[in-house]
Length: 174
Image 1 (cartoon, rainbow, N blue to C red):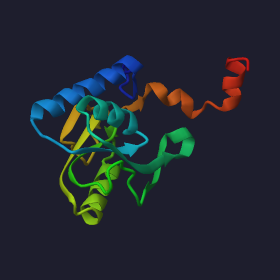
Image 2 (cartoon, rainbow, N blue to C red; image 1 turned 90 degrees about the vertical axis):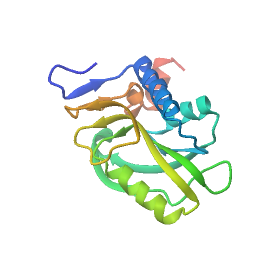
Image 3 (cartoon, rainbow, N blue to C red; image 1 turned 60 degrees about the vertical axis):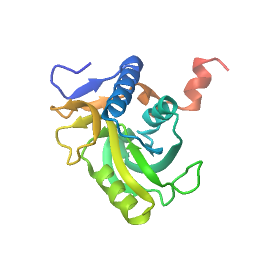
Image 4 (cartoon, rainbow, N blue to C red; image 1 turned 120 degrees about the vertical axis):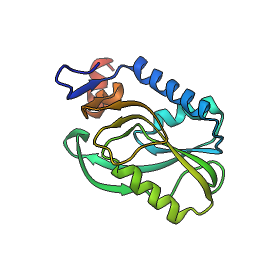
């Protein structure tokens, strides 16, 4: 649900999963065949996992981090992992790179540059995201929703950003 001022988008679990399913349909309807899904952790892990299951393709993971300050609401220095975790040796062939959104586009552009430099065995690389913001300098090959007002997206699992074990112990009276 988008707030009236267009500054916040609140997404339920059902809406979130519906977007992943719509993304799968877009990818399928394109006719493009791929060998591996590479998701960017953390935002791309949930969509990557679901797409991996739907398409029956191996899931590789690359960690990136830039939103750490102010409970994950302020973008800072981008860190990209040196290694990719994959169940099938080194990543190669046709790769679908998955993240949750193209915000500024900085992360996706930097990751693609690094992949092209460091992984010459990748022969074809395409990208998929749930959301693309108008301010993004990156346009994914597959995207479900375009956000012209550039809202802050409140994803359903973000309640865990501020939750600690002490909260769970109290909640579950353990």
